[in-house]
Length: 81
Image (cartoon, rainbow, N blue to C red; front, side, top):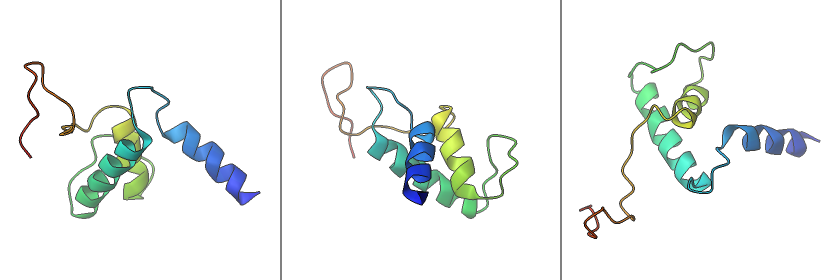
């Protein structure tokens, strides 16, 4: 029963967008959570004191910028790593 609740919660948190990757979402949220644990302030007023919850909400709302190094730029080149 606990697994079912987790799956329902995870599906509500991870964006259901064909262009979005669940793996990318998790990696970006994890890196943002580490920033929050390191002392950076949250971009949202949050009732949660857990940095992982705050980070996932920030990423889900599109407040955290990231660069996808696997995608080509408009001129057909891949950004440098």
